[in-house]
Length: 128
Image 1: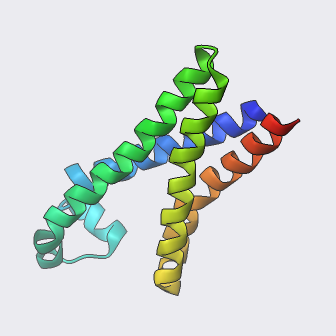
Image 2: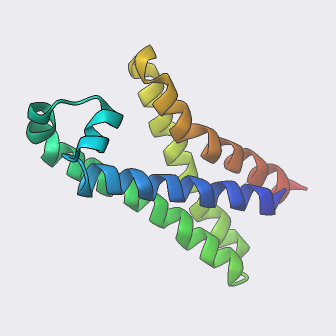
């Protein structure tokens, strides 16, 4: 179960790196605007906010990746702590997004399902 949890945490980290790219690098690109349903004007106005939000996603991914590295370096307690912190924060942010509006449910679930499963599997695997 631990391995499955770590793999799901890694997938969650990759997803958050992708979101970093969308928000901090490609925010005003046509495909990104279509993904987030923003106009040219909205994207220009919200660019600084999206840039900051993107780095938030990158930092969450970094916490998880450092945790995965710690696991690989035979420091499972440190690794689990970091994975729980990073993935748990991803889940919390996804829940906030989900509670923000029903029209954001797909985005919220995309953000929170993988890290939620990672946390559950890692917790169960570490207990047994």
